[in-house]
Amino acid sequence: QQQVKQSPQSLIVQKGGISIINCAYENTAFDYFPWYQQFPGKGPALLIAIRPDVSEKKEGRFTISFNKSAKQFSLHIMDSQPGDSATYFCAARDSGAGSYQLTFGKGTKLSVIP
Amino acid sequence: KAGVTQTPRYLIKTRGQQVTLSCSPISGHRSVSWYQQTPGQGLQFLFEYFSETQRNKGNFPGRFSGRQFSNSRSEMNVSTLELGDSALYLCASSPDGGAYGNTIYFGEGSWLTVV
Image 1 (cartoon, each protein chain N blue to C red):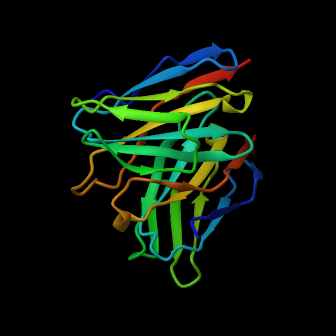
Image 2 (tube, helix red, strand yellow; image 1 turned 90 degrees about the horizontal axis):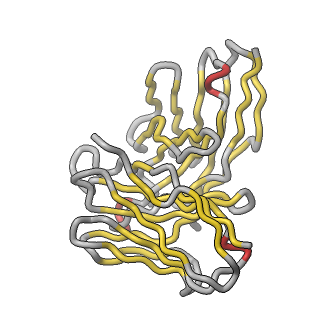
């Protein structure tokens, strides 16, 4: 199975709140999990990424939590700001497959309201 | 360092025509991948090229093809365009290997509208 399931589809958060987006995967060969942020009219931009040998990675206000046994990972955006309003995609890659193919979730449209 | 450059940014084609999209990867990157993005299907992998060889291919019909040149620049071609081919076509590049070998960078895409 190559699917990556992402939820919720859309999310509205007040300024200063915490935004949480969840993803689940089935392919245990996946070994690289990036999150991408996409603004309207732009290509996806790499936000943060994690490998399954760590349970958490933090970069500024963005944190990835990873649960290998549950095959789930999530993105937490602390102190959410209106400028964070964008669509967020989780993705996964099987590095052992010898390819740079990313399998993406369907995306979460985040709206941060003042 | 320049990012991934895609041309043209916008184009309108008629059903039955063909289209060629171009991608210049980040300097030094040897892997180039292509993705199709639509509201309904999200981001779907088309194919990946490395050192002028197709390394992997997604589940798309043979009308979708690509190639990579010796300077790592890549083109993708869609023949006999259908209305459903209207999408944002994204190119991504990666250095392939090393500490940042997994990092994949996207261009801003080429918006294709088929009428």
